Image (cartoon, rainbow, N blue to C red; front, side, top):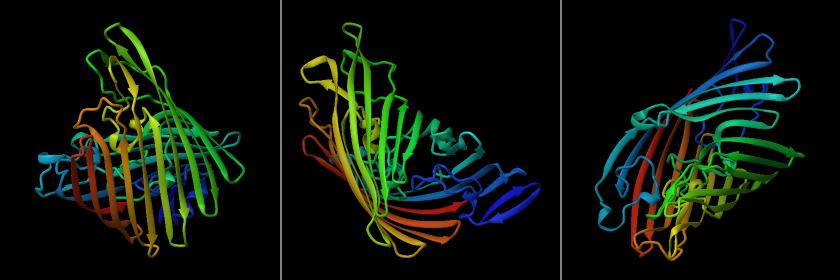
Length: 394
């Protein structure tokens, strides 16, 4: 149930009725995002509303080997060889708990308006961390939210905060325009902040970026579900310190994804990605220095590294309250002939979980994770983890 404060009195209505007051113009959400606000504050004319919500989430983690020092299951970080120990470890964490507030209004000229702010406690020492902060109307969005290169509806549900290792999943400050052509075709284009992660030589260094990342997507919807094709273009700058000149390397990527209803109770989600200089956008290798790497036989130049990956996920809904998901994903970083033997080459990810909505505001889940890292020299390391979760929705 959702409560509304209306001219000094409280009215109650179902979650299904809440969006009808002012339609939620951003119905697509990541599976780990909060749902509708717990309650709305309504003015007398009902042409605006302020919603407040979130959830309390406790995660339990039991590591059998491989990633005992990390809360996130990142296959890139799996130790290889003698560094991979079999010591068990148990930990609890509530940092994924979230709070949000959103303001919705109707405007005569521009249609629905929305302002949204969300935070979690996943910062250092459980400090508050900004996740989303944006305003939107007339098709434009300004602020920070999920990248336009993403496909939220193709994201499978996991306890694991990272999700599939090859998933495009990041939040970014941006200016975006979204539109529709008929009932089936949707599109969006954006300019997003150009954060980079580079492996430098002794003769190169990072510098501030001066061009945004340009992203876009086009989606087709029908009775079976949807398909999406997305793209990104980057112009990544760095400095050649031997000559003091600024150089750039072009990065680009494409992603095909979708969510298909195989039967009444079964859904298949998938994504395939390929590109150069786009490691920032791929979940497990983001921030690993793989956007640009040293050019072979040239100590003063960097080049965009080809990376690719894919995942598939099958979700079965046993009842309206119980569902399970099976996921397989992989990510690969190509070798341009200059990678050290111990550098990352391939990562694999497997997840199996069951979610049970015990009450409308209480969900519990259990999950098994397996991951593997393979280095250029063929040496491997594996990790096994069991997660459990209890979540109370506000």
